Image 1: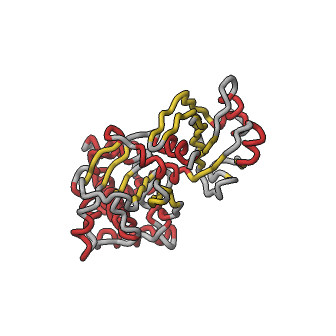
Image 2: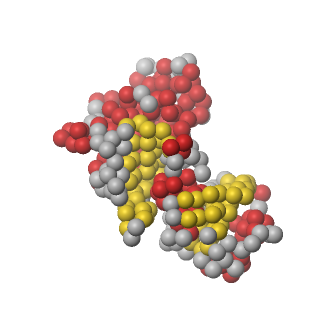
Image 3: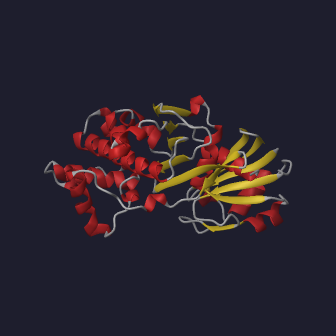
Length: 316
C-alpha cells in the first residue's frame, strides 16, 4: 500500500511516499521544506503531490496535541485539518498524530542498525514499550499491544514533576523553583534544560553562572571534548536524571517490551549515555532495582523513525 507520510514541525516539514506492509515501511521520494518559505501546509502538499499518483491514505505527525482530525501547531501559526486535506488532495483517509506518538508507532520497524543497546535485558513479547526523547521539550509515548499490533498511547509525561534523588538534585530543584514554581522534568530534560544544568554546575563550583555557554550544542561539544569540566558535569547529571525519569515511567506501565531513548539530542550524547550515569539512575528504584535490570534499553539512531511511524499509523 502506498501512503503519504509527513513530519510537520515548527521549523521544517518532511514529506514522503512510503510502501507499507505488515511491520515493514520503505520510504521513497523524501522531501524537506522550510516552513518559513510557504504560506501553509496545503501549499507544500500540492507541490509534493504534483505529478505523482494519489496515495491511498495519509498520516501527518504534527508538533502539537491533536484529536486525529485537527491541530493548531504549538510553535507555528498553522491550523491543519484532515477533512480539508482530503478535500484538497482527494486522499480518502487522512489522519493526524502527535509527533512523538509517531515515534511510538515507528518502534516496530526499527532494525539493528537503527538502534544501540544500552542494556540487553530480557524483552517480553507484546509487553508495553516506552519511548522518550529530550528536544525542545520532553516527548513521551507508551505503546500497547492491541489486535495484533502495537498502538501508540498519547502522553504528556514530560510534564510530570521532577523528583530529586540526592542532595545535589535537592539543590538543583531549589535553584529552579524560584524561576518556575512547580518544576517539571522537561525543564531539565531538554535543550534549554541542559543550559540550566550547565549554569547550575558552574554555580556548584563557585563560578559565575552568567559565564555559561549560551548554546546547548556547544555545551555538548565541550563536554565530549573534555575541555570544560562544568559542561561534562552538566551532561552527566542530565543523563542521570534522564535515567531516573525513564525508570519511573517504565514502572508505570511495566514496560517489559523495552525502553527507547529517541529524539535529536540522545544520539549526539551517546558516549555519555554509555557511561555509568544513565543506568545508575535507571536502576535506582529501591525494591525494584533488580526488575529494572531486566528491561531492554535502547538509543534510537534512525532519524526517520517518526516518519516511518506516521506511515504505519496511516494504515492502522
